[in-house]
Length: 243
Image (cartoon, rainbow, N blue to C red; front, side, top):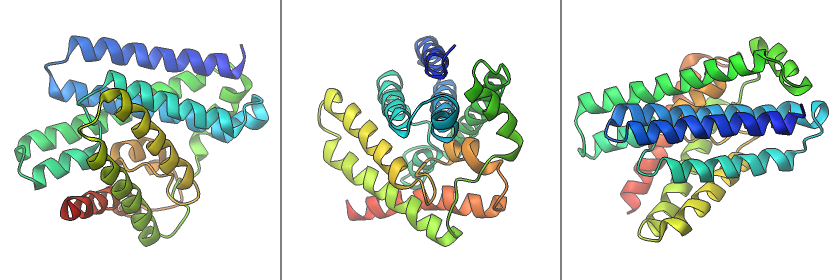
């Protein structure tokens, strides 16, 4: 089985689970937040596998990783409309007094559990070693590379800038058609991830960052928390003040 075919099968499985969960548990906010965070992290973990290993183990260039990231974000936008899967968005709702503290704590917990579940599922998938690319990724699991390539303060700035950019565009686009919003938001998030690759990887989502890099050596848990929790909150707070 080729690396690309295996990855496509994995993406389709994640999307299928997301669609079923979204339909069955549409009225259950905590479960939909869990599913959204799970799907985002599960897809991004495989995208990073393609980016890290695909070029020399599966003949998959960087363009494939970027394309798959855009497609996965666009599909996620269609399937999970109205669900953020992002703790920084949920915390901002608390700061704006749109929801209560208990609801926010439960939602953030669901998002983090979703990201953790994605890490477990991706790990089991890599252990199957369906291709050379996934065999190498499985061997690399215990020695993953940190996404935080700069000092923490610079990382906070990078994440804040990414979050601010996204939410300024959101303000411009929020009253437009979903047919226009979804591809533009997916393209923007792909751009933020691509340009942030040598800094923080541009996650602008604490639960996604948890799945991608919090378990990797290189920085303390406190440093990761400052960058990937404080950064997006600063960006969103700046956006809220500017609006």
